[in-house]
Image (cartoon, rainbow, N blue to C red):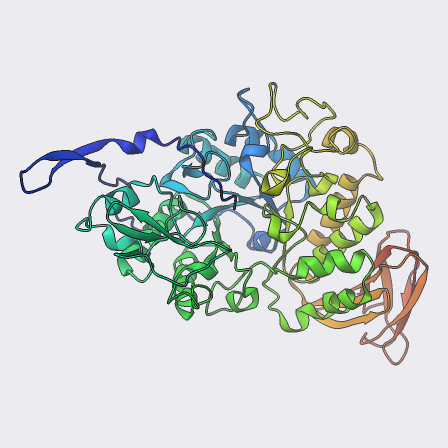
Length: 540
């Protein structure tokens, strides 16, 4: 998340009432009583989606940067609705929306000022309901970002808590009378002074942390989640779950209570039909992927091995091959996302090497886990021209070659376009069978057609030099994947197969069939920087 001060757009939240204060009875303006604190009972509207939608692939979408529908240069929900056909044709089964709730920052959205309303730049709750309706009609689920660790400083809850030590919401945040010593988080002190003490904000002064040791705060978050689930949202991506509870300057991340809190959330979400949730926990992703915690978390670290292996590191390829020998198959895999610490845009990381780029995509789309593409990955979108930091990763989508608007808007975009908008855009690639877009469509179609690739076990992983192979197995279906990351032709022996069975080529479709011998081994030859996928046909 971007950690810079931005002006609040939430002036509607700053209406105040009067309170009597002081010995002389003088009155002064006090923050508004929070309006989004009413209890919410469960009312599951059900689900029309296939149970397999949760296996993905998902597309992570920054609404502000996806499509503008009203000519203000800012992406919005109506714009996203107009692009759902693109996502459907690509084979996307789920969408993760970066924060769409009303926020203070007017950009990334991770400083939420109203947990039960839509960011004004993006539209209205009615627009959100229409998005759900249109996405579901296309078989696409929608999950939304939820910030459980902190709110905006402009949230009425914090404004009220800050106004007086006697505020009924004071204990909803973390306070000390004097500034605690010895704290350093991301190079800064996390304690900030107000008129009535010091408050804790691990990421940024305008993002005060909730006191999640307070059961009332946890219950309130549960009410917020039910608010969205009752509207028909299909689940959530939870932000910064490793930072929920602190026990001192040396124990501010990865505390046991974090898992207890998220396990409670997982149980709540699980009471609704066919829902999905995933957590962001870069410090310990495997722990949060366990069934007594989030149940699913992003495979942080794996993306760096994918990129490093494709760029020429056999040692990293070994780690790519072995990752799912111990990691839960529910992990959420990805190659890049909206945060700089996860890496630059995939096209930039691969230095424009088209073949290596496709190998990274093939690896994480064919390995276990629920894959998440970052919007624009399907066309090789580069970072924003002349931008740096997280803004470079959150540039407008390139729909056309127009170097002024990129087809994203009819006016000046809110941010600089991608550096390669003229060459890497949807319009230029949609009819080209050799384009990156066509590659992603074909690969995702293959994945969606094979239950073993969607949700199968991971068997017989092997890494030898530049070649990685593995098998995916679900019920009676077996799929073999072999990848050559090297710049020279390669051959490898795939073992662990049923004996004397045909290996029918699925990718490339015109590839040569082969057979396993009596020892369950098959010889496979590969061109440089290529991969092959086979169905093991037991009946042939």
